[in-house]
Structure formats: C-alpha cells, structure tokens
Length: 97
Image (cartoon, rainbow, N blue to C red; front, side, top):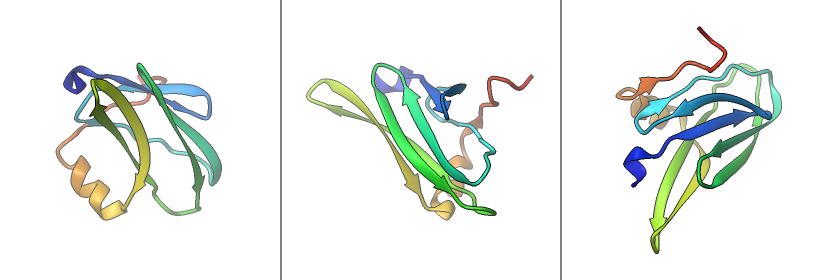
C-alpha cells in the first residue's frame, strides 16, 4: 500500500511537488518561519524555523497501524539525509520547466 503512495508537498501554502516513494525535492527559501505540509489521504504538518546559511532536511515517513496509513514529517540530521538521498530521484518543483 505505501509503495504506491504519492504525497503533495505544500510549502507556505503553495503546492510545489508531488513525490512518489524513493524521491525527494529541493526547496530554496529565505530564513525565518515556514510551514511544510505533505498531503495525500492524510496531512502531516511541520513548522520550520530556517537559519541563514544552513541546510534543513525533512523526512516524510509513512506508517501502517491497525490497517490505517499515517504520515509524519520530521527534521533529520544533514549527514544522515545526504546519505539517504544518495539513492533517490530528484523531483523538480512544479513551477520549474
């Protein structure tokens, strides 16, 4: 079930990408507070306080509990994130051509 799940990524209220499993996207944003949402059957939300000159990585995970899929967003360590995305496919923002 999770292998076919696609999530819409919403950043500060704008839909920016649709991600399938084993994919990721890059968002460039100004420092400050931002809101990240992933939406499919359920929504997961995360408030981020981005710092100048620092990369922030967020993982979208899915869990199956009693036949119900849930999604969560959580910040992860930069080194762990870089290792994890090495084998994934980049999805460009919806506004890019």
